Length: 222
Image (cartoon, helix red, strand yellow):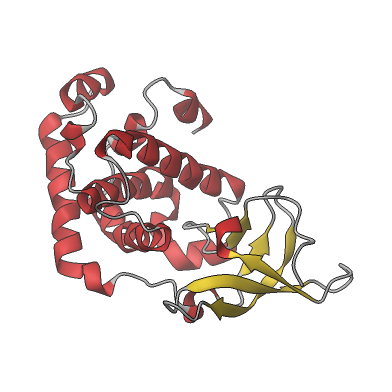
């Protein structure tokens, strides 16, 4: 896995890897949720920046997998697809991002050239992209949503990997009703009872559904 991350072909070696179609189908709703949470949609990202966005998001997703691949809850959540997460979710994510931006994979990379280097069948790659678009069209509205029931009581983890507490409450903006910040109930003995963390300072781990802080310094807010 680490060698794939370091490859000069990253992230295309993840996106073009042959994976089980049902695994991709399983992860498409998670990819849709991530895009919705981050506001990735047509007009939010310039077409020339799409490649950079996909690379960044797939890097984060694979890092999430490597952080805790054997968690019991993850096995319950993803079942037999858990081990396929790095490749199946990467494909789901890339194609969902492209779909939401109104682009195709061939708009941002020489698919024929990369597929030849990886030894992948170009027809199969196109078939997988069409499959994801078909899944989005049929199931997009049933995507798993990041509402209170999704993230309440989830672990909150620092960028350094320390578990500091759980999500106790959500704070919404009065203007548009979007989640503005999280209230974190800290672990006993930490010296803090609760703290408030702005949404801009966190990200949702799509593999475990835990909340990851972008910094290791969590003693802020009140």
